[in-house]
Length: 226
Image 1 (cartoon, rainbow, N blue to C red):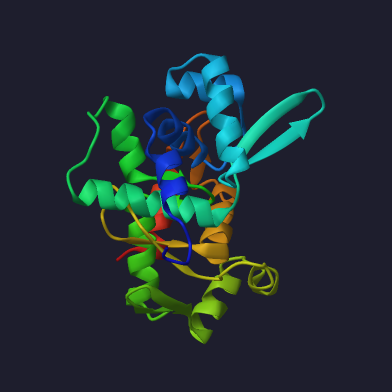
Image 2: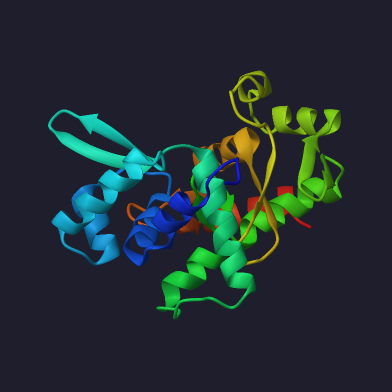
């Protein structure tokens, strides 16, 4: 028998359409209740509960308790990265669901990928940082340059706190809609938080799409134009 990690258990869990819909909903980075996730997946709360229990047991989800209520979130950014990579692979091979309408256009422009910016704006950000020499990029290996760190500090980020997190500072994530790279990791998350604080972007109460405000659109292009 071959030794090493067994990917079949995880693959079976992700491969189920209901569990896939639940995991995709949690890529918003928010913790959602079993009822909310049942609505997202189009199943009964009882059915959703069974699926959620399996994914918690497998380490894909984190069960959070708030008083008498329970919520579910992705276990960590490693799970989110794997899901977004699979979405990119599916898109590149033409495995796409029917586009439901205008909301998808918003998703393609700007959306949350767990805790960082994705979509066309996420790719624009990545290309700008790489093109200006603020990131060094060699396929999947990327790093923030000294000049990049200075620019991030000037942009309002506490780089000492960002770098101290127990996760990679910079990480490449394959964008499923653009099929190009966007920035993940602690820096990607900090940049998204900063853009929301500046009023460039607004989060949706439900869903993953981000609204780019008119002032934010101009500011984003001024600072991160390609």
